[in-house]
Image 1: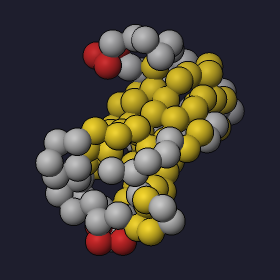
Image 2: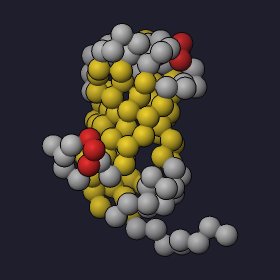
Image 3: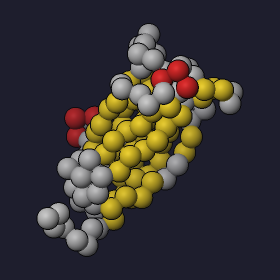
Image 4: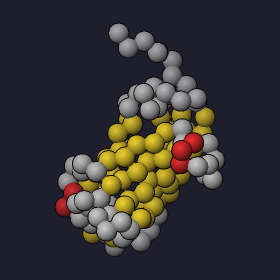
Length: 118
């Protein structure tokens, strides 16, 4: 498992489609994430239950699993939440069931201006 949690604050616009690119590495070398799942969770407070998350997404179909490259897709439906600042993290669960938080920080959702899509 990766040994360090990266702290990165993110800003998105409410109702936009966003993709978070992720490279899982250990000591600077990519980690094979074949059979792994990445979980994205954003909450009002860090101690809220996962069931109360304002945004949750996961991915087990990686861009380049052998090279540790993946993504989390946040659809416009998922990002249509109240503009605010939330706590988020991304957890990596490997094919043996080991769990490691690899990225965390604040997620700021800004108010959208245009809401029509057609």
